[in-house]
Image (cartoon, rainbow, N blue to C red; front, side, top):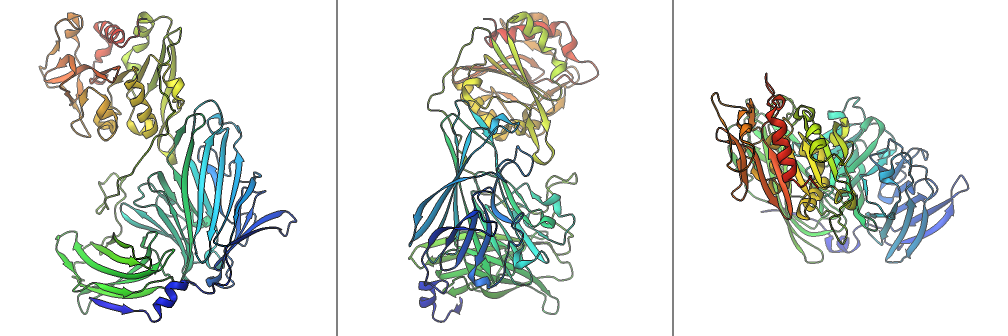
Length: 639
């Protein structure tokens, strides 16, 4: 094992940064405009926060940066701007006045809570949320720690997505700012000089909870850490000098809260960021040594918020075409790592003629100055002769290389009690996708339950934010008042994790669910990787399961179930699913189930697996209305 020694490390580890003469503190002062600012400071950092304009950090000074000023335009540049992504930029918080309360004045810790109550600016679902943002500095620590809490102060459920925005010039100007975001395809890198960054600046498949920006000239910058479990998109609008991210939308019942944590870490002497954790940072650079037939991987390491007593790095490589693997002859060991970066180069055998793409696998083991052992892993993609790693949404196929993402731990915020609510008139929620109208469902609904009130929601594609529904009742009391929910060719992405979890609770408590087939349903709708796979009485077999019905396949009706004349129906396509052991196939088409009835919790769930597609739509046959009426009665709509 090769060891890189760091002289006087014990002294540096105890100090981490110098000077250490000033403890954490907070004070209120007047800005150049005569309005109050909250000033937070420790031995390394000085923050200025404007409570009259969104509680934005409008000035940050990191003492190792010297005179560098990252936020020169106080009207635009900022850190920690709050938004809801349901609102158009700049949104209601940008210029809002926040209340504030000093929680701790130091010396070990300075903390200030800023708060603002959201208003109805045309989107009622985000109104009445109390946003509390607590900013904390600890003495002798370079990190800005932020706790964000949103509490529903109303009596109705709310649904929102939090969006954090930062705008600054690293190094004091816009030129040569570099942006780094971790994706399943490797690090997505862009520059302030890029007029058209990849995918418009979005990373829709984040692989970890961080984003970074470094000035190429001064090697100064910022690394942002956020909760990966709730992270949805990373976004850097490099031409506008922004570092942003959006969280997945959440539903909050009355009186409940959603919380997340953010950390901002200023850095210096770091050329790039290829790996980031709350323990260590690493930037990598590649060089093909053609004369030696080697790939040289130069790695620059820095500790994150606290120094490390030791760090060992094992570097390995796999060529992605030939699948040949090799490891460095020995691990690199650093005897003491603080905020001052340390660099070494690992040389690996590599054919510089064929120039295969490769994955570099890194294993980090070490010990903190507090005596805590740790182990982490990272991966780097080297594209070799390839122009780029394919976009996962491209029509030419999957990306050449992907990193396996960590499993997310998601928690749905629920009311203390979930109970069914029965109204005087039957209530139906009809969520409508591509071919809902071809099912001719409304006449049967009108005949079985003439008094039923029907609320519609439609699938839509919101561009940047992808699939969604224009209506879903994210209030548990409202959802629990429906007698029947219908998914009319609706994909799982439109529902989202929150609505799916709520539907699971709905069925468990006695709600009834009808699922209709189509290109956006079952395998094609992504049901197999969601709670629908648990709820439905059928087993999803594969992602693309819609197939033409085999010639000569007969429709059969289970004895004592549907009217016998239903066997005259002739679907032309069907989803290749299987009936679960505890469910009943009311109709089959050949060997495939066509209508399946089952129970989930106290609720009844029915799946129609034949879509209204083809030259002759089976839903236009007169027997179909009788089938629908039977199914709707089974689903409790005849009260």
